[in-house]
Image 1 (tube, helix red, strand yellow):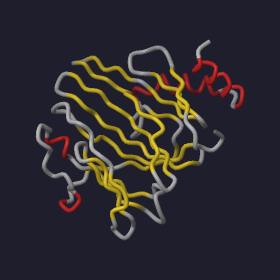
Image 2: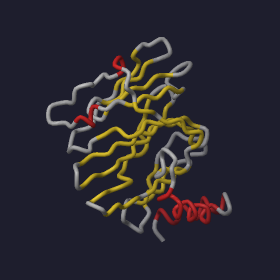
Image 3: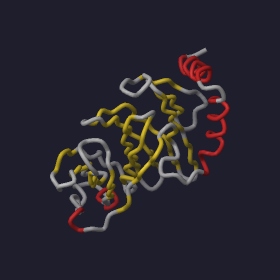
Image 4: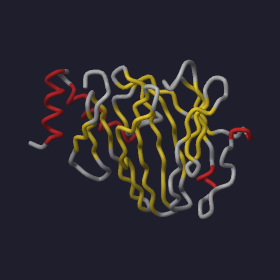
Length: 210
């Protein structure tokens, strides 16, 4: 029995029926319309929208070698846990994220992602709760017309942002689309890469119950 199976059995003993629930989720994930269909275990999700406000287009022109989609901004207005009240998060694929507090002051900025092709795009920025702890998820797709890979990056937010998970959750090669999944638990994540039948256990700390 591998580590992922041992951890899942332990959680199923603590919360009876969990394995059956995960199996149901796996069967329905491909048809899900929620903003984070690959991530399970995050609740009360608030997700970003595309932004067409000129003042928020911090990266209105793509970086050299990047596509126009890499400069398409998204905006999230929510309390993500970096300070008192709601923050405004504006971001692009190539420009990264800029976080402003309720008074409009820049409190955090992250680096962008390296451009790979014409389909590079920041898909979603979302916040939610993972076992009582605030989390931020960033979804980006990188690649070109034929091949792309969608990545999920999850951060714990408690006055600062600490990355707890990063991995590919969907791949496209022409018409062939493979999807994976991430199941968040206290203390770790069960990760199934796209196209694989094996789950991997990744340990992290900082959530309630860890």
